[in-house]
Amino acid sequence: MTPDEMVQAIRSQFGEAVKASEVKGVEARMDINREKSYELLARLKEMGFGYLNCVSSVDWIASGELEAVYNLSSLKEPTKVLVRVRVPREDPVIRSVVSLWSTADWHEREAYDLMGIRFEGHPDLRRILTSEDWVGYPLRKDYRDERLVPYEPY
Amino acid sequence: MNTPETEITEHVQETMEEMYVNMGPQHPSTHGVLRLMLKLDGEVVTEVVPYIGYLHRCHEKIGENRTYIQIIPYTDRLDYLASMYNNFGYVLAVERLMGLQVPERAEYMRVILAEMQRIASHLIWMGTFGLDLGNFTIFMYCFREREKILDMFESVSGQRLNYSFYRFGGMPLDFPESFLTDCKAFLEWFKPRLHEYDAMMTDNIIFQKRVQGLGKLDQKTAIDYAISGPMLRASGIKWDLRRNDPYSIYDRFEFDIPVGSTGDVWDRYMVRRLEMAESVKIVEQAIRQLPPGEIMGKVPKKLKPPAGDIYSRVESPRGELGFYIVSDGSEKPYRYKVRSPAFVNLSVLPIIGPGHLVADMVAILGSIDIVLGEVDR
Image 1: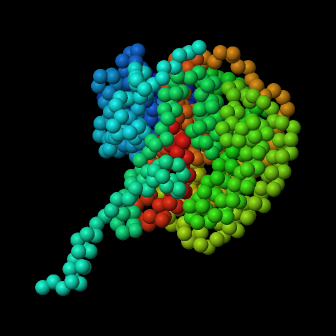
Image 2: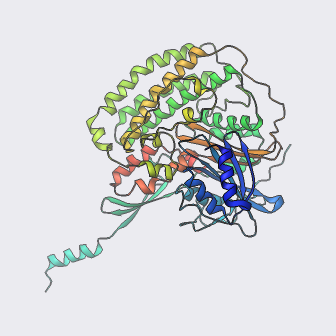
Image 3: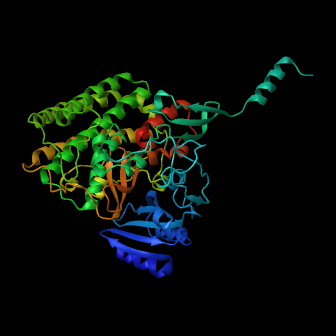
């Protein structure tokens, strides 16, 4: 399945849930609504993207949003998919995809730990890299720690 | 009425219960600071819970506060046994983001160094894996060979472990005059050494009986957990990014992709053992084809990638090493994320660990080939 066909199929099924899409070489990129994120990712898995490479998180502080980025690929075809889901900072909840891909378990725990995105339906959402009593989410742009030495550019 | 004997038996039965044992964080076989919470029923492990993060040093946060070129030395410290490959992966990601061209000769230099690094990394793995299982001699043998590779790397970059030798758009320095002859001589010397390892490990019936059938990972679970690298291939899936999603100039070389069948510890051992021979083949071909010419492409003085994001992946000795970089057009990355293969591969341990003896946990953990610098970032 080429990236264009894939985007077509997803757009026709999910309509407005896909906010934007573009195709870059063999990679299709989509920005989607969080309400439909689980259904859409489940559909992508059905379409053969059974390999979840990575789940990343980005803090878009200027627009007051957090973003989860899913990189999907398949072990049969070269087509890749990058799916972005944005959520407001006041209510950073996304439905977990651990039931689709077990590998999402640790990735989502990491995104929760460092960025503070809560994954609804995650079986064991605990901090993973920092200690359990850590306060705050270090990778957020507005994270401040009084123990930090300020880094001044020359 | 209870006799003393029955009292004792009852007491034993009452107090027989599952026990929790901490393996690590300070444990020689965890290759760093990893803590495994083992639930034991007698000697049999019924549950494994890995606790990571002891080596967490905010790699990604540091990256956001540094310029693109300042991050290169930090990538060395991710997987410190394969620093060249981390440099490779990171540099490639930024080059893809900026659309930089790399001169032919630099590409070949990159592949030669990267594959030598793969051999060195697999040698360390094999040595320490032997050490975990009580075979001390193989450890000395592997380190002897690795030492020669490190000497060569030192002659190229001046460093023995953290090289920081790749640059955006090419390589900073050409090979010294002696490097290619040294490299050829090493490969000639190294090939028969592989048979020594076979005599000591592969054909060793004690080793075979020890590891066969341990820690089986089937294909479905492997894909579900997004396992990559030798561990995925050991499960019988022929997937290697060098072949299936070629980057740099890997599509110009002929090499085989060794695969296993059952996905047990033995298969993982065999895949890595055979991969060393394939890396030798690649280096030999690259040295034969190495063209003369420039080693540095045209790169702007001030590095400002256009706004956008990229997920770029390479096949490091441990699996799929991915870099997700978000640029906002400034000289520092807006977000810099590392998808480390060892982090993902370790997450399958709670599935493949239970049902084995405590002593076998050491073998299974060793066969995953984790480097904690990369797991914890």
